[in-house]
Amino acid sequence: MIPVVKPFLPPKEEYLEYISGIWKRNWLTNMGPLSNELELKISEYLKVKNLLYVNNGTIGLQMAIKALELKGDIITTPFSFVATTSSIVWEGCKPIFVDICSKSLNIDAAKIEEKITENTCAILATHVYGNPCDVYLINEIANKYGLKVIYDAAHAFGVKVGGESIFKFGDIAVCSLHATKLYHSIEGGFVVCNSDLLFKKLTSMRNFGFETVESFSELGINAKNSEFHSAMGLANLTHIGGVFDKRKTIFERYNKKLSTLNARRPKWFRNSENNYAYYPLIFEKEKQLNRTIDFLNKYEVFTRRYFYPSLASSLPYVERKELQITDEICEKILCLPFYTDLSIEEVDLISSLILKVQNDEFSL
Ligand SMILES: *Cc1c(COP(=O)(O)O)cnc(C)c1O
Image 1 (cartoon, helix red, strand yellow):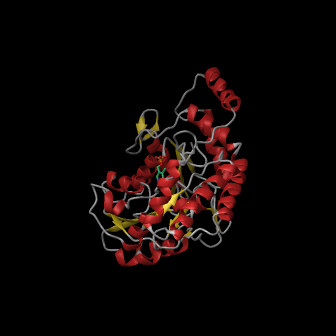
Image 2 (image 1 turned 60 degrees about the horizontal axis):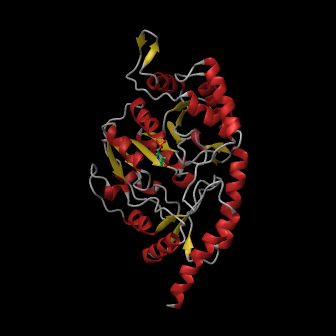
Image 3 (image 1 turned 120 degrees about the horizontal axis):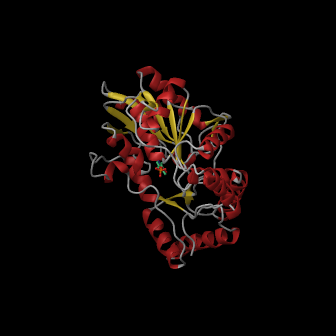
């Protein structure tokens, strides 16, 4: 059986070494030494300051909206994971969907301006599959209209734009370290912001709004993560170089083996690198996509329609909205099995099965 994703696990001994330290100290959560060490190491690795480790990416998005005191309408993308939209609604704001660009699959920055009204307070965009949004144009629009910018960078660990970490763009950028992501701490996430003042606020918010043990500076929540999660994050971080190399090899093998396939791939933003987080294919027709899924399933190869359906057409708590490009992409996009342990033989098998579907179609 080949699943669509399999979490990376470090050698057990390396994880257990961190765990024995927890037994010695008897410090299990609440900004413990491993959690602090992880924050420091991720900041160093990404070359960013003001990084806060939290218990998941979704809470990071909610904290971002809360910390920026957003009220009213937030312009966002319909082509993302549900948490992008649900955090907006959870925080009492209204999502205003802007169609995506058919090439990048990110929010079409050129269509943002026409959706801005006096109720608009922010833009919340996702770097889909780790492909950077047009961060320069979005920044320009935000400055022109005095809007805040939050990036859902859940897929974008390790991505750089023009040589700089993608987490430096926007007022706040949020990453997920969930087990299914390329770098993870089982559950987890982090929030990055440029402003020191905002960082102080987020730090207090993560811990119930405490300022000192007996005083509060903010409305807070419990967004702390445990020492056990931090241990996984630390153990995995020492393997990150190998993880990227391996994923790049798999990615390039798929490209080579599927070069004759009648399908396209998202176009990457200029001056940025792929972090090989996913392997999406955009088929020409939904019929070909469905045949491919069914045929692969027979061989116990599992794919995922990611993202499908569009957030603007499926959530019971938002007004249904048809968006031409998003709806079309949702119908035709498929993510192939892609994880660090996937072998080259498996990539070859999956590729040949996909090509077989296409060739059988031609001969019909
Ligand atoms: C995974 C993901 C999230 C949620 O992150 P969690 O850590 O699972 O809460 C949010 N947005 C996108 C685009 C994601 O892929």
